[in-house]
Amino acid sequence: MNNNNKENKGSMGTIKTYKAGYEYLVAYKITMPIYDYTVVFCKRHWKLLSSQRTQDQMVQAARSGNTNIPEGNQQASLEGYIKLTGVNLASQEELLKDYLSFARQNKVQVWEKVRVEKNVRELGEIWEVIRKTPTLPDIPNFPDLPENLTHAVNLLITLVNQAIYLQKRLQASLEQKFVKEGGFRENLFAKRYAEKVRRETESTGGKRGKG
Image (cartoon, rainbow, N blue to C red):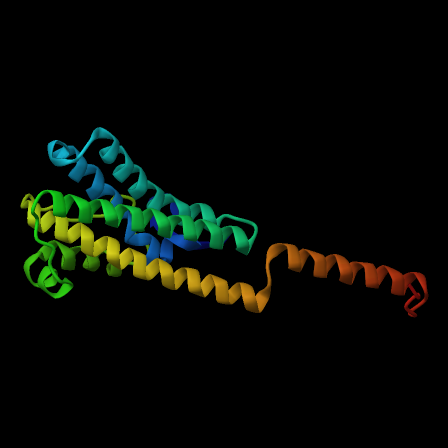
């Protein structure tokens, strides 16, 4: 488990707080506003969604996209981390399809990223919060989801696209690390083999036994 320490000084002296390694990943940090906004979006616009099932699926996909990186980071094996990052990525892609379907079904124009950056101020504010500190505070001060439906839909589509891009990069990085360093089982086998060699060497007085 990858943890990093921070020290907060209060009236009772220095208090150490622990942050898991995944909390420093932008690929994780961006999933928090996506999850929170999706919950708000589905509550606000439930009448425009195709069904209650669609609403539940969107919230679940957003939640899954927010939880699988932390779960993967806690895995003993790199293979497990890669697998859960893939699950996380699939959840984001599913959520993107739902927002695009919503836009199509409700005649909402989908904008290019440049237009979203120009017209939806919340996008820049969200990234300002994400980049301001190495990890997000317990209650990030993200702006409210825009009341304007077109702005809200395009903000979420843009955020989810950005999350997909970042998580593909994370997955590629983990896969490259796996190729270079090997997985948990491979490393465990190497350690067991090294221990076997050590014991054989000790038992033969420094000479390897045959067979």
